[in-house]
Length: 256
Image (cartoon, rainbow, N blue to C red):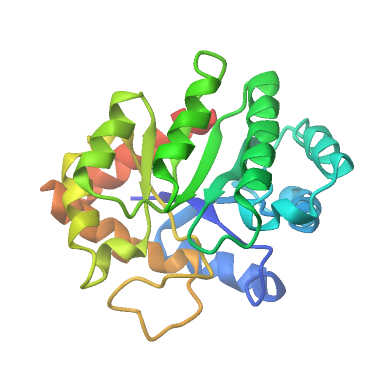
């Protein structure tokens, strides 16, 4: 069955310099659709430049909370303009990162709200990054309650309690190769409570290669099949059934 990588960074090196080969390997492995995700103004522009070069490649525009300290109003307005491209299918990744705090928390929150406003105005789905900031992320999202469309918490590494909290709000949850890590028991417990129709799969490449490919330090979409197989096992369904379900979810969520 075919899969869609719902969150990749194909404009990051070294993937960008070999994108044709990366996508060829992906297709051969059974992953024939990709959503490449924006993280800053430069990446947003690069995403726009490659979208028409590859079938089944879609993009998002967003500014990661790490870069909140460097963002100008013109950066935000440019992102709003780029979001009008027909192959831009979401806003993000955006959110809060209180683990590294590369930008002050107040600046992160301000930038997060500006991107939520763009998502509200454009009616585009949202891709949420939240690390060590779960309660505040939810509080900010609640301020926009009723004005936002589909929302996914990407690269979910939280526990089952937080997964249920997200699901109760009608949001989706996306899992990476982290689900295969020996230390990820809580994430696997979370995956067990997420219904198939609210789940997506991603690489977050070039990061977090899944087991048994941990030695391949540069992750890529072809490796996502290992994450999908682990999730199918956790959910107690056949691989074909799992792939069909999460692919339908991804298409429905992003409107593709």
